[in-house]
Each structure stands twice: as C-alpha cells, then as structure tokens.
Amino acid sequence: MLKNNHKYKPLILITNDDGINSPGLNALAEAVSPFARLLIAAPKKQQTGMGRAFLKGDKVGMIESKNININGRTVKAYAVNASPAQSVAHAVLEIAAEKPDYCISGVNYGENLGLSYTCSGTLGAAFEADSLGIPSIAFSRAFPFNKQKSSDFSDLDWKVEKYHISKIVKNIIESGFPGKTRILNVNFPKNLKRETELRITRQAYMNYARYIKPADRNFSDAQSLKWELNPSIKNAEKDTDIYAVHFDNVISLTPLSSRMSVEVDNYYGR
Image (tube, rainbow, N blue to C red; front, side):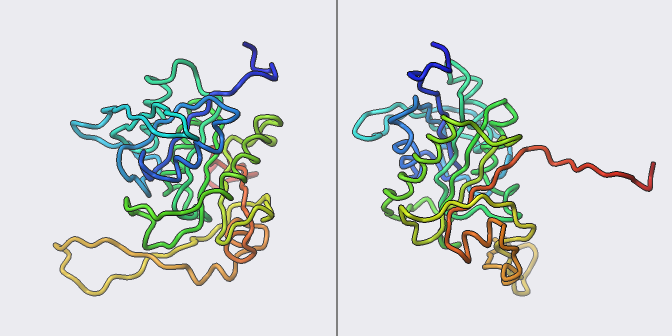
C-alpha cells in the first residue's frame, strides 16, 4: 500500500529512556495507537541521562518480549537490555519487519530543556533514529528533579498529555515536519490543560538545572552529584524552551536537527 494513500497507517517506533515499564511509555502508545501501527521497544531498565550512549557487557543486546495493554488491547512489546539509543538500533535492525515511518520517544518523567539535550536519553533515542533516517519526536513532561531517575513511577493521570500528543502527531503525519527539521522536542509544563498554548521555541543556551557542589569528602568514596534549578534561568530569552515551559507554562515545541556544525565566514587558522 502506498504511503500517500489516506488509508495508510504509519509504523511508529515507540521508545523511551525510563524503561519498558514506564506509564509514560504506555500513555504515548495509547495516544497514537488509533491512527498508527506500533512497534514498542524500550530499555529493560531505567536509563535516564544516558544521552546516545552505547552500553557494554555480557547481557547487552538481550531482547525479551512482553505483552502490555494498550487501550484494552494486548500488544507485544520488546524490552532491550541496552541504552535508549541501542534500543532504537536493535528495534530498527532486528525487530522491525519494515523501516518505521517515525520514532516517538517518551513520555519522559522530567523536562528536557536548554543544554540538557545531549544528556537526555529521551532525545538520545530520537537522535539515534534520525541517524537511521527516521524522523522523530521526543515528549517530556515537567516533573520534580528528585524523582526523575526513579523506577518507582508516580501514579499520574495522562489524559491531557495524550490529548496533546495525539493532536501533535496527527498534524505531523498529515503535514510533515517543518523545513529542515528532523526531530521535534516537545515539553509539557506543569498544570497542563487541554487549552494550554503550544509555542514554537528555540533551544535556550543555558542549563535548566545545575549541579550542586558536594561537601568535602574522601575521593575514594562514591559520590552521586545532585542538581537544583538553575537561578540563571531568570535571564532566559522569551522565545526559548525554558521560558515557555517554566515561566509561561505553555507547551514548548522545538524543531531540531542532529547536525551540530555551524557556518563561519572566516577562520584565523586558514
């Protein structure tokens, strides 16, 4: 069946970095399942903050199938013992019978704003899909910092998120990605409502959160750095993702490309 046929249902790879058991993954799948075919493949365990990392080890790459409930229907999903990026690679190269039309990652417990993009496993999955020629969308929602790496997922009502996900993805399927965009980074604010504005934004060039300097310690002891809201975000420009989500409490949609090089007119070393 041709893809331009109005009856064609795109194949969407659903993934995340919070792990296969995340309610956010389930909410994402439920939001798009009425108008898409699903391939669900995600890390077996919590992989927040892994970026586009590739894990090593004897068990890396093991894939387990499991049944999950999506809108009252049993759907086979795949738990990959790997990072988010590796999960995408295994899904595309080994599990999928055909190349997915889109990859959608999330819904992440925690914002992915400003200079956190390269740290994010949610976006790492999207970047990996883009490297394989698959346009991608990353969805994240505001959530307390101290709960973002947990596997003890909070019980949330995802109805409003699902409403907006469905609306955004339907529009992409019907109209395509804007311009040279390869990835859309979508962040939902606190107190999200059906009528919440969606704003096209650009990436803020600052950290949304900052590390807290540890107390004096013995360097031979383990230390996990903690972070807090960056007070410098008060200087965020009004057209950025941080300003939209944190200050105006609107949905931020940031068009991205994996290309990181910049054009320069001259360079002193030439």
